[in-house]
Image 1 (cartoon, rainbow, N blue to C red):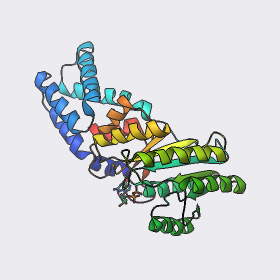
Image 2: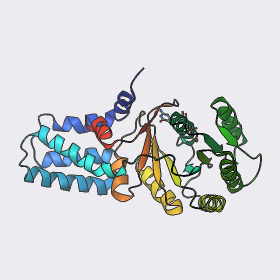
Image 3: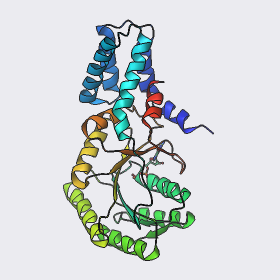
Image 4: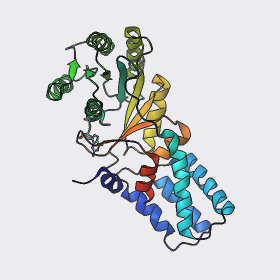
Length: 298
Ligand code: GDP
């Protein structure tokens, strides 16, 4: 069985080989900086983070009088770690009774899979989990969740029809009554451009707050690591609507380029609680800036 780090490295291999090759036997000149700029842009880092990294790197090279390419690569690694470090923050359990989490994202981002992984993660910490099937649009999704819940000892609150905010409210009430540790409220996938659905998310959040003061305590956005710069647009839109507390970035084992984390760090530094590195329930890892940069730059 491959370790998650191997899978992450494989997923980010395009970016890491693009970046690493630049430094092999290279001279530290304008050509190198130009190629580096292209490679960073190709990695989905975006203009702002790319400019920032290059400016910082030029300064570091000068200040530290770096003369060989290997040292410049190390300098870039250090800058990337420094940039991504603020995104590293553990999801703290046990702060509320129950801890109420609301989970959103676009369709196909990996929301359902991530909820399963999160439930397993919580159970490992002896936390009981209750799930609100807030995706009231798709009956099949709801049924799938019920079956999954039974199999994994997770209570699923669901309503055949109706209002996702009501389902969420019921789940919070039920969680309080049962003494559940964590209530996870799933929401239907939606695009930031679907304004009425973004309004609906705000409503779900508001109604959860009526069920419990200060809830939801965690507002998570699940994003597909393969969506490139579009991921940044999603973070901005969902953060504007909900004031996100954390991100889960999925599919980093696939063919993601990884640079979008730099863009997020620069423009909308919402903590990355976890990264998804596979389709199985165990394939969820707490985000660690150093490990990530190690996979990205080898
Ligand atoms: P949802 O529409 O957001 O609920 O997305 P799903 O949870 O149904 O996931 C969509 C697809 O992405 C499924 O085929 C999942 O197995 C896959 N998926 C989710 N997370 C990961 C991940 O971290 N790595 C890989 N390789 N696939 C993932």
